[in-house]
Amino acid sequence: MSTSTPASTVTAQPARPGLRARDARARLERRLGPRAGIAGLAVITVLTLLMVLDATAGPSILVPRSGFAYPGWEAGPLDHLLPEVLSNRFVVQDLMSAALAVLFVAWLVVLGALPSLSRRTIWTVVIALHVILLLGPPTQLTDMFNYLGYARLGGLHHLNPYTHPISSETYDPAFLLSSWHDLKSPYGELFTILSYPLGLISLSAAYWIVKIVTVALSLCFLWLIERCAVRLDVDPRRAVAFVALNPIFIVYAVGGFHNDFFMLVPMMAALLLVLSGRDRAAGACLMAAIAVKFTAVLLGPFLLVALATWPRRRRFVEGGAMALIPIAAVSLALFGTSLPNLSQQSTLLTNFSGPNLVGLIFGVGGSKPVLHIATVLLIVVIVYQLVRRRDRWLEGAGWSTVALVLSLSWVVPWYVVWVMPFAVLGRSKGLRWASVLMTVWLLLTFAPTTTQFMNDHDLSLLTITHAGRAALSLQHRLAY
Image (tube, rainbow, N blue to C red; front, side, top):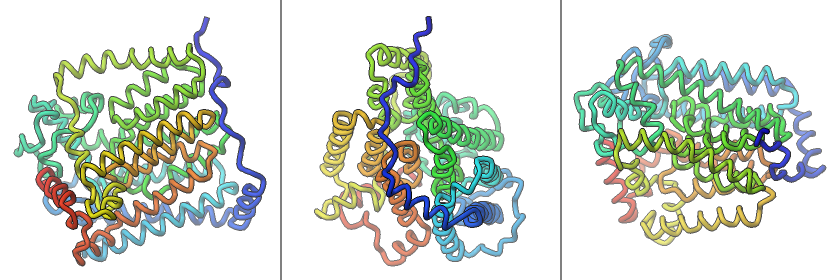
């Protein structure tokens, strides 16, 4: 006899929004119509293509460290297809900032005109965007070469990346292209284990393998969101478009080829498996996600609430334990008792992180007491969502993730992607608006023009307090 329990036993989410809200949305959607939707999709596609073409035209601020080295295999098959007409860094940064703003508006237009767009149209554009981004270099980020640096450190040079930084092998070709030279790896054991074979092949081959796998995982992530939407009676077109066409998702998550997809795919798989009644598999997937990035652990308590019955919860925990055993065994064999370097990363600050902004009000910035208070408040939010919103566990997971991002001292744009699946799959209009506002906040604060303006006018929020200056000093020491 099967031990799976039908998905209908998962705690139900509340009813849809009220009639007045639906009528207002319907009027907006009728006003926009299919032309606006198609125009929005066209703008997103064209701007993405132009961004990639400009990045491949030659060294620029779009591709960090390209001024040090920019091999043809990194630029890709579109290398110099567009002349270097936009080589001026100030022109590029202003155009990039303007493009981010236009992408954001186009995203909202597409969401407003969504009923006039077919599922095939949306997926065609989404796949096209992924192909375009695959053909170009990582934009705005050097993280991929950090991944490859750690992989070569362990797989090729037989040095533990949890005890040795990338600078331990300064003659390796990955060193020149990476950025966090003196930071020991903060990435989870499973991700590091999977990356080790890449250290045994050429850097260019490993680079393209990571790009292809990341793009494939991104599409898988979106497909899982669509399947969850069907299970939860949410419009699958809206679920896919809300995430996939978000400018941060396009430019920073997929365009940066970030490893968050190695966490997001098993995390969303765990959610879908819980909705499908496959509890042991769900537990195993969530454990895999946690072993990539510990952030995924936040979903665990909410899935336990969703399972509702003790037999289902027991099977979920059993699945997690079964996955943990081989991961822990391989980790001990390769890394001993060394753990990911989260301690240093947790002390770094970004200008506009929640703790730093709140701390500035009291003149202390993101000091340790402020970070401790932020952690306590995060725990309070999680407990509240678990205790008081048991019938709205999906939204509870979303609000807790929002609280997590706001509590972090080091905040980067793609963290909003952690929130978006819960925002679009849940029934909370407030959570969706929160994810939109987070997108605005992160786009504004990380836009190249904003960074340049703050540098030109000496407006760094990290130089005001002792904690900020210490974090800035640590960042410079670890990164350069």
